[in-house]
Amino acid sequence: MKETGRVKAAPRNQEWLLALLPVFPLVLLVTRLWYASGQDTQTLLLLVQSISPLGLLSGVLLTTIWVLPALILGGRVLGTLYSISARRSSWLVRAAERLPGWVVLLAVVVGVFSWQLRFLPTLAMLSTAAVGLLVRDRFPDRRELRAVVCYGLPVLIAVLSYAVLWPAIGAALAARDVATAILLTLPPGATVLLTGPVPEASARSLTHGIAIVIAIFTPFLVGVVVMKAPILPLTALQLTENSSSRVLVGYLVSSDDQMSTILEREGAVSFVKNSAIHSRVLCPDPGAVPGTWVDLHGWYVEQSVVSWLAPTRPQGPVDPRCQGRSSD
Image (cartoon, rainbow, N blue to C red):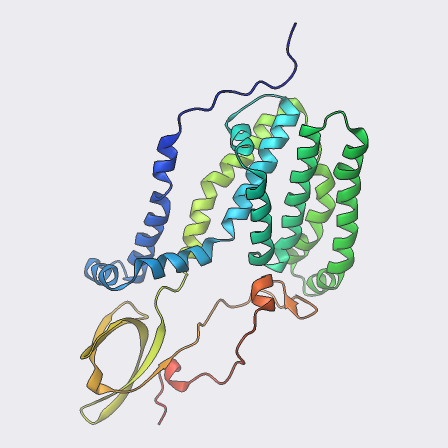
């Protein structure tokens, strides 16, 4: 008698993969320091000696935390989609099956708080697709349950999403912001297409192809984001030397009783005597230039839930020393 169910392959010995997991963050940290040092070996050694690894790692993790929900939900959806379409096992299916439910749920929660508003419809699409595919895989004989979860739930979420997001969608269309309009409009309507199987002939090329593309381009995308992440506090020092005054703006590397080490924004390193420092100010993070001003009731589409809800200090005038001008 021929068995029609999916046969699960025995797990392979993949301890080597666990050993390689710390390598990627380490490469990111070293590359970030190499970029900040202006590709100068001596400056790189100075930064490695002075910067706290924990502080640098914290900055990198806060910058790249949005990647984990995308990888976890994408792997779960693609693996389960191939499983119910081809009824065969593969490395993608095994990876999806090894993700516990609580990990997927935690990824959704992290994504809700860390992803920008314009990406939340995509998060809702992946989450709903993961639930629908799970129901198809675990309860193949429950037609009523499949109809509710795989069809009724996506349609309901799409209607609610369009009702809530319509002001932002209209603002994006009025501003001719095509990318934001697509990100707010396309995912809710496409969710119902991701909760069912695809033709078996194209299932492997579709799911595994997307997974391979994600695996190849994610490190490069993370690397680009990390290269722009701040790793040192930006300070402005007003110096008095030889009866003349000047302002030095740069990143504070280290400071002791006699000297302060400053990494200028151009990459040069300056050693300043503390006796020459007339005043010092911590400059605000210049941040990224907004790519769009589309908002939803004051919540800009480039803001995350955390940045929108968290209390912020009132923005005052920028200190002239942070612009390289004396305060006198």
